[in-house]
Amino acid sequence: MAEYIAPIKDMQFVLKHVVGLDQVNTLPGHEEMTEDVVDAILEEAGKLATEVLSPLNATGDRNPSKWKDGAVTTPPGFKDAYWQYVNAGWGNILSPTKFGGQGLPHLMATPVEEMWGSANLAFKLCPMLTQGAIEAIEYVGPEALRAKFLPNMISGKWTGTMNLTEPQAGSDLSLVRTKATPQADGTFRLKGQKIFITYGEHDYTENIIHLVLARIDGAPEGVKGISLFVVPKFNVKADGSIGDRNDVKCVSIEHKLGIHASPTAVMAYGEKDGAVGYLVGEANRGLEYMFIMMNAARLSVGLEGVAVAERAYQRALGWSRERLQGRPAGGGAKTAPIVQHPDVKRMLLTMKSITEASRALAYWTSAILDRAREHPDEDERKRSQAMVDFLIPIVKGWSTENGIDVASLGVQVHGGMGFIEETGAAQHLRDARITTIYEGTTGIQANDLVGRKIGREQGVTALAILAEVDKVAAELGASSDANLKDIGSGLAAAAARSKEAVQWIAKSFGTNPAAVAAGSVYVLKLLGITLGGWMLGRSALIATKQLAAGQGDAAFLKGKVLTARFYADHILAQAPSLSAAAIKGGDSVLAVEEAYL
Ligand SMILES: Cc1cc2nc3c(=O)[nH]c(=O)nc-3n(C[C@H](O)[C@H](O)[C@H](O)COP(=O)(O)OP(=O)(O)OC[C@H]3O[C@@H](n4cnc5c(N)ncnc54)[C@H](O)[C@@H]3O)c2cc1C
Image (cartoon, rainbow, N blue to C red):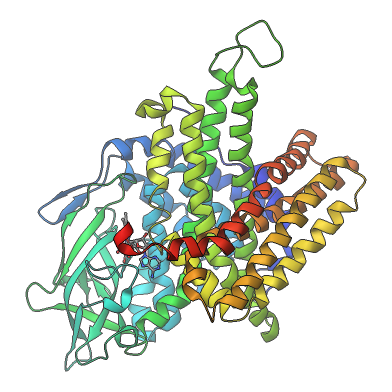
């Protein structure tokens, strides 16, 4: 089965030219992010992805993690791969230097993370969740907790988890019931059940540090009464060594549609005296803290959509060049590789163009996340924060929906063999399916987008970004190049439809929020394809200039321009129907009473 090869050329093009390294290497502490450093990091990460993680992807699918008497054994090779990953220094690239991390910007970590997701999505989840737990402890503290847990988590010696979900509390975390009782020594004792906890138990490391949402005795109902705790699997002694077993255990793991290697655990807290937990930050502010970390976590999951799409595309392209069937339409006497059939080419170009559009938008967003967190100027930090807040639900929702669509097309390109597990195409579709669900479903992202990010501020940030899209559309439209002109007119039309939808939300959100909610996923997709088109429009302009100057790889650059043109004609062309469904479609949803369903 073909191994994943990191799309380094496209990653370099997006980082260096579409986003621009100066977005980030002008920030204090990131001056070292030069072109050479970026190239070296991408190349090294690409090797680990291809040689170590990719060969284990199918192994993990066929040999799911196993539970026995509270312990979980991961598939053959996974533990060894984890330690290769950690020993090569990949586990701590984003973490602060103060605790032994490398302190790289998100923009640099993003393509690297994409590679792990493409090579082996089930593997990638453990480091991703550890990073989320590290960020929570790092941001909110207190110092004693940071000193106790961060060095070993950052070194990869211990991993982390996020324990939010309970049977009755999924999308709606205000329903969390796990209890935390204060103790005289300042610690808490936790009792309750958490479900669906990714890598809640495994055999990679000697300790697992759980971040847990729970209610302190007597806390108010709803979102304002939830606090955040650190609960280690093994208590940690004052000298940092491992102590006795804490009162937390994995009671089972789930049998799932995909990501089979990743254990999804049911966790029981406090079956005896209560699990020892340490409060992170202040009491009753747990959900607020989760929101601080949510942008990075949702960006990571959005990137999983890009990652699986890339892998599915590579597999489908390889297959289409080898499978011989039929004669090409309009000529040729011989049976040809299916890549020559126009409809197969259409499928491949759909896969390629939306993958590249989602990649560029995700990388762009990660640079803005860096600026929002680290720019020395407060106004720039605020402006970037507003942009990133607006972009995150789009990157999360749109890219993961794309991941499923692309993986599904990948199966189609394989024909009957796509339905047979042997080719690997089906695994991508099964694995991609979770990405639109965890870390907030597409419906929850769309609610966030039309509510907090558009409705509440009357579309100010959305319209400001769409004005930037208009500028690129105008530059494309003013060109004498027929391809660029075509891309420009497609982009201008999609931007107009997006503005129409944003203005309708600004007008209707206060008076008819149910109609806005009914069309919210269409708005998310409309903005996704428009902003993706913005990125590909910029790519086409840059590629055309480089071609004219005789720079770069001509086939790659021509491919960039023509992929953008395909995207304009096939994907941006969907904008009017999405806008119409968003604006008019709500009424027909609301007209149907529950009894008619
Ligand atoms: C494999 C896997 C791994 C996971 N890993 C973790 C983890 O590590 N830690 C953790 O805490 N959780 C984890 N989860 C849980 C995951 O985050 C939740 O499953 C997810 O948030 C959805 O919650 P739910 O399953 O309760 O669905 P529900 O909330 O019941 O949603 C069901 C449907 O209703 C829709 N819906 C719900 N509310 C609204 C609303 N207000 N507006 C519009 N539509 C709505 C949803 O979009 C969805 O389509 C994981 C889940 C899985 C399956």
